[in-house]
Length: 80
Figure 1 (cartoon, one colour):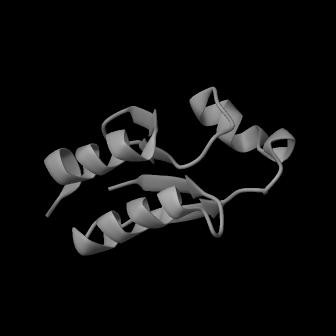
Figure 2 (cartoon, rainbow, N blue to C red):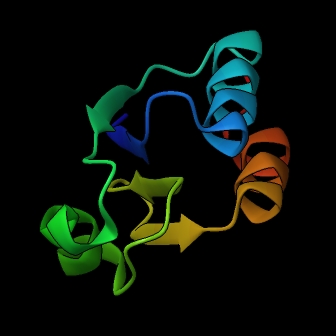
């Protein structure tokens, strides 16, 4: 499984997603992004936006933002 989470240190929405991934036993890699929106080129490249969190599921061809959408995806699709 190839899951990547783009997150910002100290972001409460990112923490919720991290917690959900951990609680559901999902293996993933975290890419920590810059605090300045203007420095988040990699996030923009993969998602079309600079906001985080962003989850990328390479196996399923899914890229999504918005923590609530990601939490639902984790529960319905990725949960072990």
